[in-house]
Image (tube, one colour):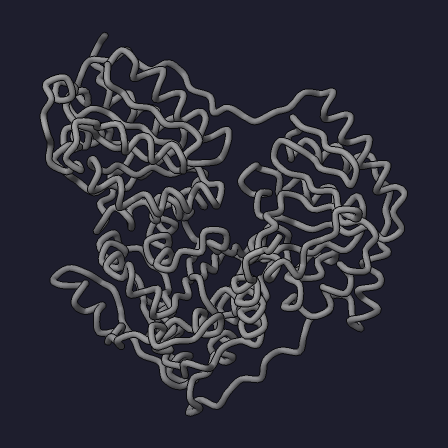
Length: 565
C-alpha cells in the first residue's frame, strides 16, 4: 500500500487535474480528511465563512481555472453547499463536492448521530446530491476509494458538471493504493456521426442566402470558443452572442454585431437576427431569461442548434458529436457569405454599429446609473474581467463594451443572488498574474454573502468591488414590486474596517457623486495588499430601460394562467 491514504489519494488527483486551491469549512466529520489534504503543500486549503460561500467560491474558481473543489462536513455543511453545487450544475462547471460521512460502524450498530435528521438511514444526502451532480459516490471501503474517486472526477471533467464524493470519516486516513497517472477525459463522438452532421450543416449553410452565427454559453465549458471563431472567420457573416455568452466572441472583432436578447438586444442586432434565413447557434441555452420570456426564441425551421454531444437541424438530429470538432470541421467546408454583416453595417451606418459614448457628468453631479457604468467601461482593458451579480448589473454589464481580451462573468442560468461576492473570491484566487477583477454587486445581493469579503482581505486579493447601493432588490421591483423588495440600509464602506481588524489591507470608500466615484476608482488603481470596495449610492428607481422591458416580459411569462383543456 505504501504511504498513501484515501485522503492523500484524493489530494493527488486534485493536483493532477490542475487545482492549486480548494475551499473548505471544517466540521468534526471532516477534520482528519482536512489534515490529510493539508499534507500536500502544492495545493492550498482555503477556508470560507460558510459552506454556501465555499461552494460559490469553488464555482467562481472553476470559471477561471477549469474546475474547482469544496470540502464540507456531513449534512449541516453539505446541505448548505447544495445551492452552490446546483448552480454549478446549471452553469456547466465541474465542481467536486467532497463531504465526510459518518463512521462506517454506525449504520450497522443502529446508532443515531448528530448532524443528521435523526434516522438510521445515512444515505439521503447522497440521494439528494445525485440530482445536482453528474456522478455521485459513497466511499464506505478504502479499497473502493480509487475507482470511485476517479469515476466521479473523470465524469465531472468530461460532462463539465459537478460531482459528489462522500468519504466515511474513519476512512480519510485509511491505507489506499497509490494513484497512477491521470488524464482528463475528453468528450468525443464517432467519426460517422460527425461526418453526417458536418455534411448536413455545410449543405444548409451553402444554400442559405443570409446565414448568421449565434454564440452560446456552452462554448466555454466544452473548449469550443476557438473553433467557433474559426467557423465565423471562414463564413464571414454577422456574429451575435447570447447574453450569457458575452465575451466568448471578441467585441472588437469586425464581425461582431452585439448581444441578441430579443427586445433588449444591443442596437441593430435584433433586426439582423430576425432577417437571417439560417441561424447557426453554438452551445446556446434557450430559457425564459435568455429569450426574454420566450419572445426571442429562434424558429426551429431556421435554426441549427449545435450542443455538446448533439446537433439539431430543422428536420433531423445527429447525436454523439463533439461541439468543438463539429464547428471546426464545418469551418473548413463553407464558403464566405457576408450578407448579414453587410446589412448590419448598412442599417447601423458604420463598420461596427457602436452607439455614441455616454457624456460624462460633472464632478459634483449626483451619481447616476449611467455615469457609474460610463466609468466602469472606461476602466476596462484587455486584462480585466468584469463580473456582474444578478439584477440590473446584468443589463448594464451586458451593454458595456469590452475591449479585446477582456472577460465577462455572469450566473444567468441559476441566477442566485448572493453568488457574486464568494464567486469573486474564488475567481480571484484562480486568476492569472497581472489580470484584474472588477465586480459590480447590488446591495440586496451583497447582504446575503457579505462576510466573504473578509477572506478576500485575508488572502490579499487586489480587486475592485463596486457595490451599488440603491436600497433594495431593483430587479425584483421591476418584475413585481412590493414592500419585500426594500431592505435595511448598511454602512457598506464602513464594514471594510471591521473586516480588516488588526491585519487587513482592504479599503472602503463612498461615492455619491460622479467626482467621488472617479476619485475612488483612481485610488483603487494604486491600492495594494487587498480589495477596494466602493459604495456607489444611486436612486432606487434609476435602472436601465432594458431591465424595465425585460422585467415586464418575464412577469408576463411567470403570470400565464394554468392551461385549460
